[in-house]
Length: 293
Length: 307
Figure 1 (tube, chains in turn yellow, red):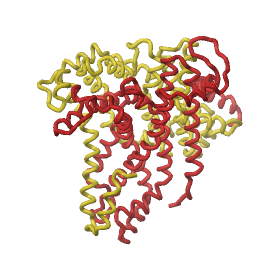
Figure 2 (cartoon, each protein chain N blue to C red):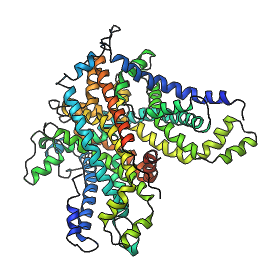
Figure 3 (spheres, each protein chain N blue to C red):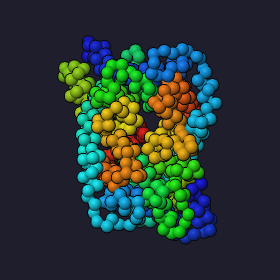
Figure 4 (cartoon, chains in turn green, orange):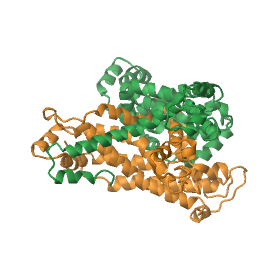
């Protein structure tokens, strides 16, 4: 607890003016420092992506002599960034919608129906949030191998779903519990069955929760690295984006084409950046919502 | 509504529970079993050897012991720094400025800072790894920090920060904190938003400064959130590996100076084909996580303050 506390008591104790000019100056400075610590490395990588690889090594702090767009062409063609994007999308269309559907189904039943085993299943899911995934990696690798799903997108999709379920179920169960019972009862009186009640009444009512957790899962699965590293290791062309970038980094590292590597990194950052700028409030809420419940 | 209840429940639970049991619960259970054998992972032959793997674990001075030490350091240091920074930023950005007609709000520029601070959280760990590897790179390879130090005439590690045993672990922890702070800033901000403003107004009327309001009002009322944050961060700390994998030489080097438990499991399982041994380390990690959760839930609870 040492980093910034020591300076503060002195400003108070020395009878500084009520508004604490020193404190203001200090804390404003610190806030800006942290902002710069984020902006500078990101901006610097963007700048570097326009330099030749020689410039990157020799004049790290300078501006590029001319905009070297060739890096982007290299990243796209030799680096296969474009196809990594498509691979990731292809996986996530199914994994995110599957996670949401299965998660919502399980959470709804656990939140709204009393039956034997309800608590056990609920805690079984909740406990999964805490397991260190490393422990399961190898048995999981073997399990998928046994059914021929290793190095396939189908395998990756079902694994993503399974490993996203604990948090999704945990969060949505809490959410379904908060929904008013009156509407559901009215629907039942009107003759809605269990399935119609879920799909036509409860799901629409749960929309804010579903949106939050969908964002959470999109970001989580987009950034997933460890599972594809282990489960999609055979063919580098099949890599998802984070894995593909890492392969690029391993291959081209320091001595190789670092210009193309940074161009690839920037390309991978652009969609995230655009989405973040457009939806930053929803993204912040989505990512922290579960923690607050 | 009574009829068809159990078929409905079954039809909704079968798929999620089945998938979860097959791909999550079962592999974890198998790992426990494997840890009691001498299975290499590749053949189908193995014998049960009891707890030998666990005993050997604590004799492995090449990988396991350094890894336990480093993960322990990360576990102690990273959550504390992240929480302190997160609390400080959240307080300054939400309640720190207090001039305009007695209304309590953040300091100037709060919105901007909040957007910026959170950004690393949405970047994938691969991007973060590549970014920081270059920031820490040696001067000859165009590192940002080494270059900046050189430009003002200060000494910098010749091989960069990541290839230097003295700095590599701190460098990794720095990146972890860098990417996590924004999340906890937002997390603590929402918790602070639920603290009634009149408490602050009353405190200000009574002449409290920002220090007193923080330590006497904000922190006590935020205690539950701090505890939750600590559990989350501890789990993150135990699972650190991908950054080490992406940034450091030999994925845990130089000379095992950034070896972490997750990385050692990965190495033994997928590089050295010592599956049983890797599982034993995993089981230790599992119980470490379990202990953390239980301890913090058992002893961390304080009296709830209603407001």
